[in-house]
Amino acid sequence: MSQPILTGVERYFSEDDIIVSKTNNKGHIIYANPVFREIADYSEAEIQNKPHNMIRHPNMPRCIFKLLWDTISTGQEIFAYVINRSRNGDHYWVLAHVTPDFGTDGNIVGYHSSRRVPRKDAVATIEPLYKQLLDIEAKHVSPKDGIHTSSDMLADILNSKGVRYDQFVLAV
Image: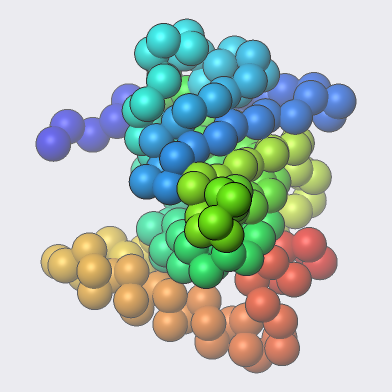
């Protein structure tokens, strides 16, 4: 598999804007608002029914996505800092709020994510942590082992602070 193109250029969106997307319960995009499409540089047709991870930046630790999926798949919401990649390889940071969508039968039918501009000081705090987690993941031949080890490290950090991840994120 080829490596994604990375430009090192950061994109920004207005503090008044909200990036919104909805996915089915498998994580395939069923809706993306114009702000999402503009910053990610995809047309509606290009992203419809595609996996949301098409905008995954390789500098985003996989253990954070595991934590996110583990949380939302149990019906809970989560806040998380995420670095995403635009089509051309630019990147952009967001503070994401991800919630499950429930059907009339009470089962999860999909997910909704609203993303806002993160504070620069929060990103400056999160980036070194994410780098540590990535370094741990990269040391393992097995991606599964890397995610497990980095998840353990993240849990140790959070436990030492006496907080859950979303509490940590909101306090940064």
